[in-house]
Amino acid sequence: MGGHAAFIWPALGLTAAVLILMLVATLYSLRSGEAALSRLKATREPRPGRRSPAPDAG
Image (tube, rainbow, N blue to C red):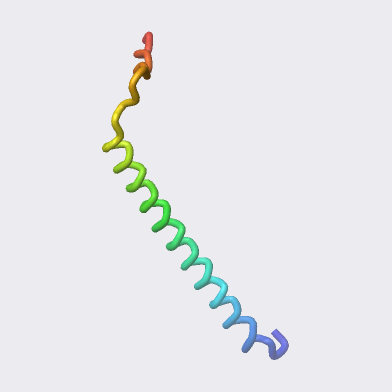
């Protein structure tokens, strides 16, 4: 690498670490949001005047 390896390998490692941390943070946020949505759906009361969806005519 012409003497540049001392700069390239740490930069590559740092980039990989940042990408992995971003992936972990995204997955944590997704699961947290899904859990919150599930809680909201479980506690939601049906609105008056709204019909339930028609059953499939199978």
